[in-house]
Image (cartoon, rainbow, N blue to C red; front, top):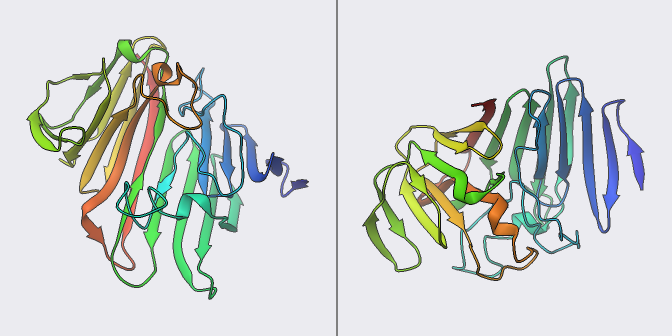
Length: 267
């Protein structure tokens, strides 16, 4: 299926999953309707995509997509099945789109089986990338915008702006962390959000990505290293790092938003 919505927006099937492809004078991007899942964002001044997407991703309906910005909701991690919640495995509705001279604005809606609105995801894709998630279902929930950033070589990456203490999920305890944070092993760390942007300095691609976390209580840093992961090649870990904008311990209330703004510039 191919469906042209505007000259800049076209819906295309990637195997079993419909994907909105965006080609605009300021930006190229891709968003899967499953999960309202941003797969790709490359502003005109960036030589490489800002987000990492697995080169072996099969795009099978109902299976979480490996890469881009999955929405982990209404729970985070393996507290229930499926891991990281159901939102990333379900089809969302493209409820609004607007093409402007400097950006494309999109809105995606997630409905439950009774056609009640559960959640909304708004995107502003231009020279910067703004993602705004709103929890609309009744009760409390967890959410994480689980961004996979594209880097040339993980061993040439430094993370700035993180606190010097983190909860190490691998050993289930707090530990001191060096700053800037370098990654040379399996890392799964939860930081208390300090209202500072996280800076990803990528010497390989000579660029810096700035991640501004808004209304987050935690920032999660993850790289699986050699650990085998579904939907990822053996060497996939070398070219990605996850810096996630999260509400894990401080639950979101109905009507509350969590958002992230991402920008990229050369070093």
